Image 1 (cartoon, helix red, strand yellow):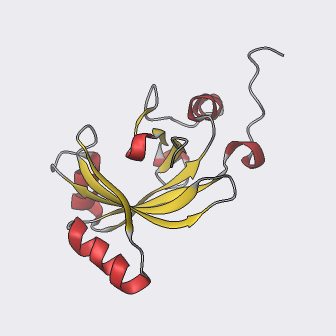
Image 2 (cartoon, one colour):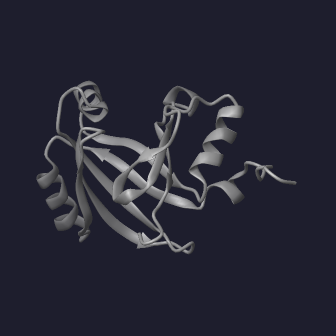
Length: 154
């Protein structure tokens, strides 16, 4: 059937835990903690001006779908960014969980049809050139949830 989307269920929608986002006040100190404590190394780092964060991706493992799982360490570059506001209210800690999907656009539309608020009208560019959107935490039992379609080379 042309134009029909596949049914939404975990087996077809989510391919992996892509990353866990951790908000921090000092990215360099936090990276050093994860390096010294667990042996994790920075796989990628960047500044995302749109989201107002400086970030480091620490690769944890490779996954069977050809992707990987990461810790994403996030330091705000400005107080009015989403992460800056979150840190001011909550302090350091787990900020969000991100699930990998092959079709962030289609899955976001399917989830929206089920009554879950999707925070972006259209997916945006995320870490390492990925396409991302977020789901409202009040609709996800208090968890800010991100959907990620990774670039093929990451």
